[in-house]
Length: 94
Image (tube, rainbow, N blue to C red; front, side):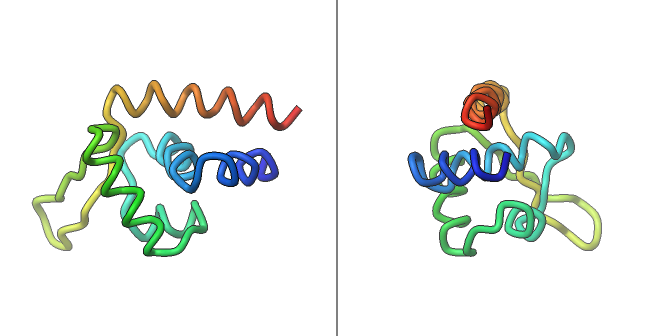
């Protein structure tokens, strides 16, 4: 499976990796969690998140209580895209 994710990253950049990681966080993920699980540089992560926000594939939610964490969540569009990416990942793994 990791090999398939690496192939997808080579073909499409880090965005598929980030979306697949986010798919596994139903309640959203912090920037730190995303960086740890996706294993991409902070610069690449922030650039990808900026584009994903621009295209409304993710949303950023700030928690109202202390500590105020930023959670990144998939939108419905993002969930659909992540499902397709998971199928591509599965096909590349076989």
